Length: 393
Image 1: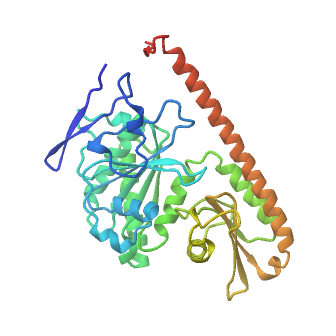
Image 2: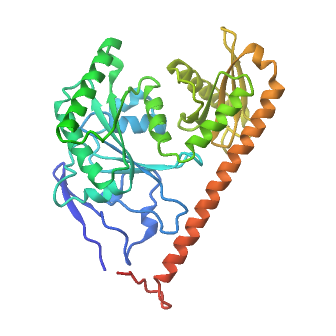
Image 3: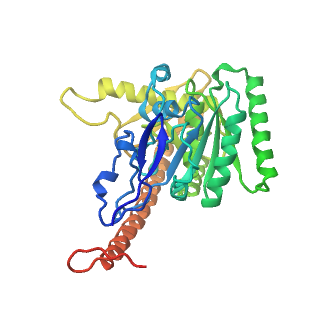
């Protein structure tokens, strides 16, 4: 049994895209390309059937030069925004596995803007079927009439295949616009996009809009909110943070993924952009200083570990307090100096909070092991003694 391949034209070359489910002849090792490179010769694969969990998929879509690849490089590869000016236009579908922490685990698929996803020979249903979030990037500094048309077509097709997809619209490159112009652009795009859905009797489709730029922290905050929707433990984490801050005299707390600076949870109070930026800067300071002083010359590994902790006193009687939760997660808190005088109580409550997070993580691991065992049993039932796979009808 062999896989059929679909061909599409990309920049004058035929790119073979394998969109079929794995079969007898598939080599699962070729499908675990978590190095962040573009899929070799355009071949997109699937995870091992014995995998402990299915990673949700985030699709990055939009017209050419809208800034999709720049977003991915800045958020997940720590590329300087100025360096993205030299990125070449993407001409292949690129897939990257993001597994920075136990709670941040997903795949990002970066789609070239020139690909016609709805060509009859292109199996777009396979793409949307396993997708958790679809991010459509619109260049705010360009004429977005064509982008809105493509957005409507993409959203309506994707919704018919998978109604559970979260649709996110990044109104990108707003760094060059005034605050009033930003709000005007967002209002106009929001109205046009929703009017198009209403005309098609698809008011039930919900679009979330974000103003983003790679030159400030807005892109990290937007990605944080996208990723949070893919975390099933989010209500539990938010509840734990609410309990922690109410018993510790803390005004605001974030649970950060240290590598990407995405906050995977926060308490129920509103998020202030300036507060979020201070958290990101604090994480950068901790990592940079730890890289200089935290490791000896012959010591390998990450500078962030269980001993990592930082206290910053701001000039407005506010204290920032960072503590390690897991080797990938950090808790960043904001509190008044008078509240920080009860540091012993805060540390005790943090110990209880960290223990609760570990219990949530343990439950998740048990569920993953159960799924893996169940998958192995199902797979073994489809295999006869001579090792031949039997596909049930």
